[in-house]
Amino acid sequence: MSGSEPRVVWITGAAGGLGTNLMGVFQEAGWNVAGTTFRTPLDAGSLPRGVYTCCVDVSDPKSVKTGYTSIQNRFGRVDALIHAAGLVEDALLLKMSEKEWQRVVDVNLRGAFLCSREVIAGMQSQGGGSIIFVSSFSALCGHVGQANYAAAKAGLIGLAQSLARELGAGNIRVNVILPGLLRTAMTQALSDSNFQALALSNCLGRHNDPAEVARFVCFLAGMMNVSGQVFNLDSRISRTAT
Image 1 (cartoon, one colour):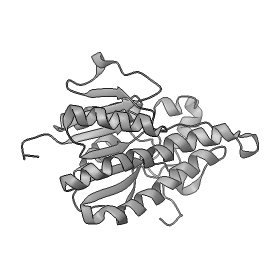
Image 2 (tube, helix red, strand yellow; image 1 turned 90 degrees about the vertical axis):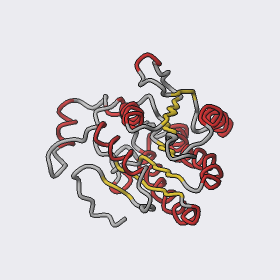
Image 3 (spheres, rainbow, N blue to C red; image 1 turned 30 degrees about the horizontal axis):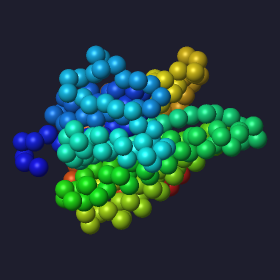
Image 4 (cartoon, rainbow, N blue to C red; image 1 turned 90 degrees about the horizontal axis):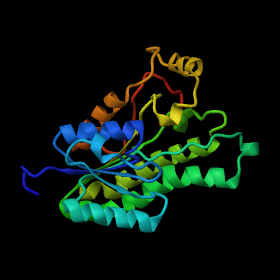
């Protein structure tokens, strides 16, 4: 790739509040952007010019392979993978069905595995790349009724740090972000009072902003000497060692 040729980022979960901000920030930074989604169609008219979108079920290996091939056919490479696809199906464990457990694990964790596996060979042949998983503070401390989500998001940390060791020799950096509490579709069920109470658990007494998270992710994707790290992007302090 020549120095003037834009880098290419693949963003999963592009229809979400964080995903749409990620697409906009990367596009503004001069990247070619491929956004994929499964549950919610993307309105091409509302997207930045030049953003490429397609449907990918991140829990299905055939769909992931088809989506990656489509992106490769469009841009010829993928320099960064941002796995922002996520799903919550909250329930106390005694009342949680196996399907509710499996769906959450499949989207949040299996999806990261499948998408990463797809991009690795290309990144190695290109001389490097960046993989970033969007995890959650729940991965560090857990929350009542979110055993499936917390387990899947914690799994992302282990996956990322293992991959960082495996892929470092190929200049592929693998990191995790914990974006903090965001006003997105995933938190829309929270009442204003509950949302504010959660915000007050932060040292700064407020929740995070999807645009600020997106700017950090874009910066991290371009950092050449950082890998195997977990970045907490709000002001909650965890007593759990990472």
